[in-house]
Length: 121
Image 1 (cartoon, helix red, strand yellow):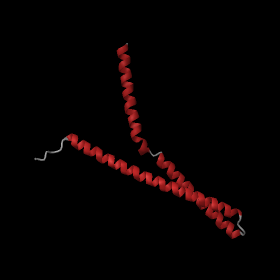
Image 2 (cartoon, one colour):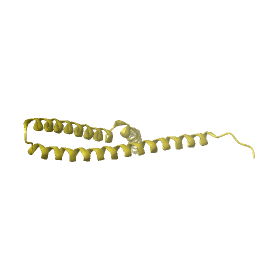
Image 3 (cartoon, helix red, strand yellow):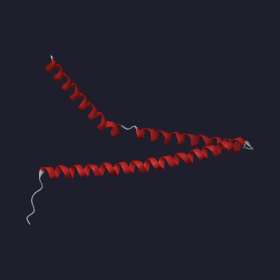
Image 4 (tube, one colour):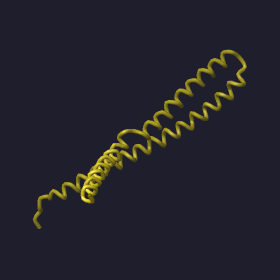
């Protein structure tokens, strides 16, 4: 059997498969990151609750100050994780393809509408 050179269709399919594999890998990585961030968020929320309870029962001024500093630090870390989760969910790269498909097909719809309107006249 002789080996035939790949056709343009074969190359397009190979390229599409490669892109699909890359997209799937990126999706898996994103899913793993979101799960880790959600777990970290739960841990920080638990730590925040514990620190608030300890703050209410603080016996001296130095304990109160250190607990207050820990509370502020935990709140800041929690806000950073929440921001990271929100920004990752609404990133432009995830919506780019949907946006351009809407523009393309919306534009196509307008052109078809104009053609039908002109034909019906």
